[in-house]
Length: 349
Image (cartoon, rainbow, N blue to C red; front, side):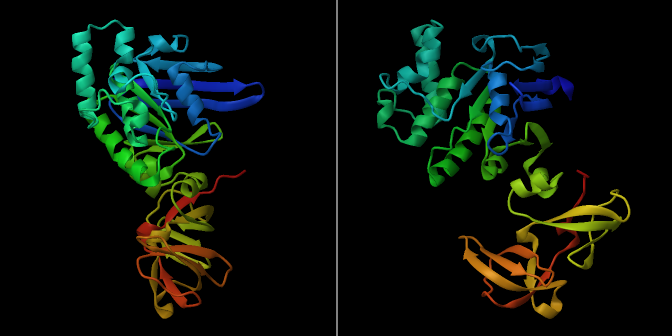
């Protein structure tokens, strides 16, 4: 409902000289949700975050915060804090002093500062680290200090600009879980920027996929993954087989020289379409039992599954993921169920 929205971006445009970075963006953010702006470099996600923070001014459009346009409000007067990729902790201050910095600037009484800092360090499991030098902390510990330094000021919205990208893989995965836990406990709205699809799918309540300064799709992680709106989203979110085809009629589609039953309806009859099949949704069977037949090419072990390419007679190279390995050069069949076929109406141009 509208009253649950804390932020509404209305016809937001940002232009640098002749280059349009944001092209008439419309987006709402609900209170207490974890929303992620996801897309490749140059898609406009960081510019959107900087405009929300007040570090950039929009060329046109509105930034409504609780119904009030804050486009001309300076950063320090917005009820918004930011955590950057480089957490920029003060090296001459210990952990306690770094976390307390914002409160000290506001001249909050020392007794209250102590209580609030201890509460924040407890939140991120850094009790007893108060007197530690920040340079002695691990990367993940430093990032947690940076997060609670922002949260201690009790912002209604916390902006996070790729804060985990500098961490190693294991630490990044641990911090994804930690961030989501922190967000749930403090109840703030988190707006997170990343180009990492797994990060977005793991942490978010809502994912906003961006490309070329425009929003391509907004939805829950499951919906964005399973029901991509266009080939860009299908290709950018996870691995996909994207093929040309035709929607013959409701629940009937043709591609790869075959007709298939699907679950899509309302796209029209005998119209061009793009077909998306996720590699994990293809089942390898005996050649005689397959809807499609092909020859296994490359085989790569990915840890939890094998990733294989299968070349079909029409020249298309399928990507298939399976927990069972099929040797290169093997003739195989492939089956795809109706629910595993996603049909997108092809847009001209």
